[in-house]
Amino acid sequence: MMMHIDVSSVLRQTLSCELYSNLVTRPTGAAVRRQIEALLADSRERSLTVIDFSHVGMIDFSCADEVVAKLLLRYVAAEREELEAYFLFRGVTDDHWDAIETVLERHGLALVLETDDGARIVGMVNDGERRAWEKVYELGRACAADLAIALGSLPDDCARILDILHRRRLLMRLGDGYIAVGGLGEAHA
Amino acid sequence: MTSVITVPPSLDDQTFEQVVEQLASVPHDAKLLVDARHTRWASPYGLTALLTLGQTRAERATFAAPDNEDTSSYWARTGFFTHAEELYDLRGSVPKARGGESSVLLEITPVVKSEDVHEVVGRIQQKAQLILSKELNIDAKATVGFAMTLSEICQNIVEHAGRGGWVAVQTYTYRKRLANRRVVVIAVCDAGLGFRQSLESAPGRVRNERWDDAAALEEAVIRGVSRFRDPGRGQGLAGVRRYIGRWDGKVSVRSGTAKIAIVPSWDDDIPLTEKLAPFPGSQVQVTIPERVSGGPR
Image 1 (tube, helix red, strand yellow):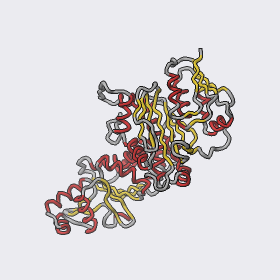
Image 2: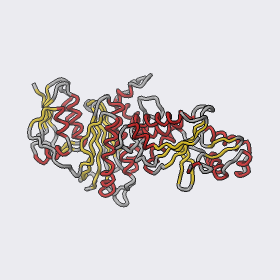
Image 3: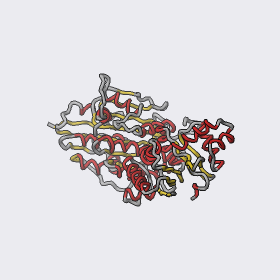
Image 4: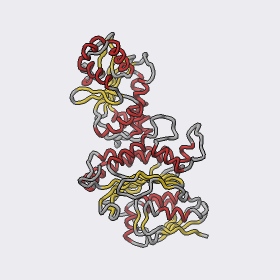
C-alpha cells in the first residue's frame, strides 16, 4: 500500500489556519505527527508512505523532533512485525535539512530522501550499511548472496546488514530478497 | 512611600543590571516608580526587560516615559507603550505609534502560546531575509537558521516560563565594539520560572550543594539538559548555539542571579557571571553581526 502525505496540508488542518506554512513549535509538531499516525492507522500490515515537505516553508528543531524523529522511532525502535511502515521523504530542501539532520543524529536514526536523480540514504548509518543500501538500490532487488557478489563480501555479513537495514525500515523485504525504500520506481509513484 | 527606580540614559543588557540592583532592596509589593525620563536610548533587551519588570510587581507600578521626544516616539514605534500601558500607570508624554520603524524587524510582540511563535516566525521571515543579505552581508540561506533561532528561544517561554513574555528584533550599528558594523539583535524576556526552577521540576531530580542559577544555566545552555526526560528535548538551545557559532554571533542568557554568554572574539563579555541581583524569569539576547569580507564565519 502506497500513501502520500502532504505535510503542509496536514499542518494547515492541524492549526485550522491557512496562513502558516512553517513547521514550528513542539505542540504543532506533535499534532502533525498524531495526524500522520492516524492516517497510517488505516493502512494494512505493510505500507510505504511518502512524507512530502515540498510546501513546508521551514521546520525548527522541536518540530523536526516530533514530526520526523518520533514518527520514525515509533516504527523502528520496536519489533513491529505486525505493522511494517516505511517512509520516503520528498521535497526536503536545505531549509529543512539542518533541523532534520540534527534530530536524526540525536536519536541515531536514518531515512531515505527522494532526490532529483532518485533516492539516497541520510542520517546515522555506518559505511557498511550505506554501501549495502546503495548497492541494493542500484540492483533493484537483492538477496544476501547477490549483495555478497556485488560487494565482494561474505554472504553472512551481507545477510546481517540487510537485516539491520530492514529493521531500520530502510529496506523492504520481499520473500528472500530486499528492495530499497525509494527503489524500483516507488519514489515517483 | 514610593520607591523610585532610575532607568539609565542608555539601557541595554549590561545597564539593565543597574535597574535590577535598585530593585533588589524594594519589597515585591511596594509602590514603585520606574523613572525613564532621562533615558535616551534602549535596546530591544532593555525595552522587553522593562515590560517584564512591570509583570513582576504585585502592585501596579508607575512608569515615567522619556522626556526626549525622539526617544519616546521611537519607543512608541517599537510597540513599547502599547504593552506598557497594560502593566504600568504611564506618566509623561506618551506618543501614539505612527508608522513602522525601518530598523525594527519585529516590534515588541507578546509570546504566550504556541500560535504566537507561528505568528512571530511568519512575520519575521521576509524582512529578515532582506536585512540579513542586504545589510549584514550574510547568505540569504541564513534566514532559515535565524527564524529557527527565534522560534526556539520563543518556545522556551511557552514551554518553561509558566507565564507570557515578549520578543523584539531590531537592527542597529555597533559603533564602538564593532567599528560601525551593523548587527541584528533578538531579545526575548520573560518573568516566569527561570532555568533553575524549571530544571528542578524534572521528576526525580536530585539537588547538590553546587546547584544554583549558574549551574542551571550551564546545564541547559551548554549541556542541553531539559526538565523533560524525553531524549529529543534540549536540542533547541544547542541549535541556537550552532547557528550563533556559524555566524560569529553572541548569545547571552540571564536567569535568576546568573548570566551565561557564548562570547565571540569581537566582544569582551564575561562567559559566566554569578551573584547578580535577583530577577525573575529568563532574559535572552542573540546578536548577529554584519559579516565583513575576509572576516570570520
